[in-house]
Amino acid sequence: MMRILITGICGFVGNALAIGLRENLESVEVLGFDNFVRPGSELNRLALQKLGITVRHGDLRMASDMEALPNADWVIDAAANPSVLAGIDGQSSSRQVVENNLGGTVNILEYCKAHHAGLILLSTSRVYSIPQLSSLKVEELDGAYRPMANQAFPLGITLSGVAENYTTSPPVSLYGSAKLASECLALEYGQAFDFPVWIDRCGVLAGAGQFGRLDQGIFSFWINSWVRQRPLKYIGFNGRGGQVRDCLDPCDLLPLLRKQMSGDTAQHRICNVGGGVENSISLAQLSAWCADRFGPREVAADPNSRPFDIPWMVLDSTRAMEEWNWQLATSIETVLERIADHAESHPDWLEVSAS
Image (cartoon, rainbow, N blue to C red; front, side):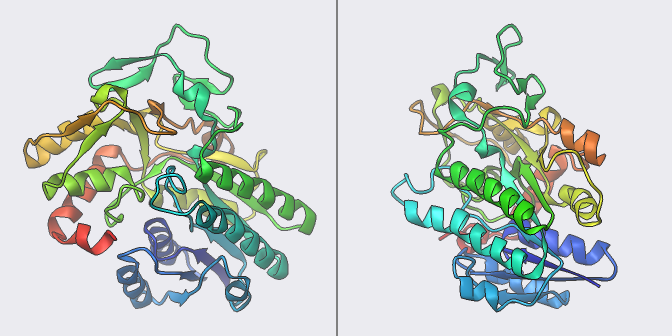
């Protein structure tokens, strides 16, 4: 029986993957650990345990916590401080960002080395360099930015999105640089100690049950805040909400993860996995969707940009499609509807999941 260990198992992504693997794979044991610092994570622990999934308390920054875990065949790393503003926003420590997102990776890699376990590292689109993304010539159409076709695109960027050969040169944010360093270390460990490593750079992961905090996911935060009449604000880019992101349901990762753990091989160890142009939306368009679903309301505007803000980030997942035969399965409309249904049926979700 294959044993799969998931770090951050009680976070939104770890929880979704644990349930999906448990329900769709036979002869698989799923277990994981979490430090439970995120409000709402305790609720996920109870739901996972009811499915027979072992959940332990542990902090991946502590080598001794990792050493106490049983052996596994594969590790899926779904633990991270995911905020691009982490460490510079005055709300969190830069040291904590690095300790969580890079130091924790070292402990995971030492675990994989000791148990000869394969590793799937869930990374992020935020490893891609910001300056050229920020300086793309964009035009606004139907309330959303899109790159203008008549420009000299940087290598790796097309109208279809950002591909893996786009530069990862700094600046990429503390969060992005810690994840990028984690990718490099993971590949080196896998090569040096002969265990398989796959790196999946994900777009914005979203879905029902995602914690209602801005750093946990813009789509859930925006919809839950809209329903509760909480303050919302367009920041930067003339305060119009034209900035665009792609959207991916974490369950759409499952077919790819199963292939990566089954012994299938691909030419490249790193691939993008995102919603692409077809599953992308701007904040202004998201507001229009919310207005249709729940009724109109005012959104404040602040034209001043923040560090690391970019007008358009859409991942090009062509490599995953060609090398893994991966396909997007869940439309952005379905993702938004599921978040909305969850928001309506959990009227206290913001209080439960926000610090």
